[in-house]
Amino acid sequence: MEIPRKKKAAEATTKQAGDAAEDRALAHLSTSGLHLLARNYRTPGRGGGEIDLVMREPGGTLVFVEVRQRASRAFGGAAASVSHTKQRRIIFAARHYLMRLAQQPPCRFDVVSVEAGKIEWLKAAFDAS
Image (cartoon, rainbow, N blue to C red):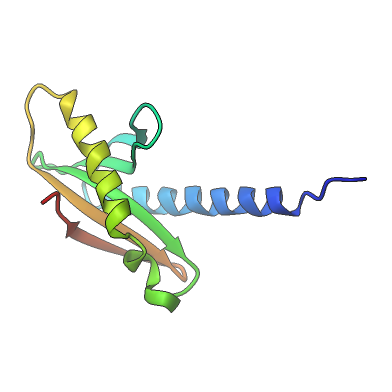
């Protein structure tokens, strides 16, 4: 009996689409003057969080970026898919990242949505409070 590979192919396609969305978001933010510090920053251990892009603005503000990609705006679109739980995981990872720094710079949480070929950059999409 042969094991179907359809599911693995779909997972690979989803990962590739996510990576492509991150590449587009990174290019867009870099063109806007931000500098990449880390990509796919993860906290160690289970149950932690991940930050898609950690960037620095020319003025020194550290920007933690969540990239979301959707084929359409149905069901609220990409930006709306950043749930409260997802925000908490990103904030957890950001705090972990900041512990490594001697001085804490100003910080912000942005969301970049990639939908139907368009990029939308939402600055200060949520906060850590």
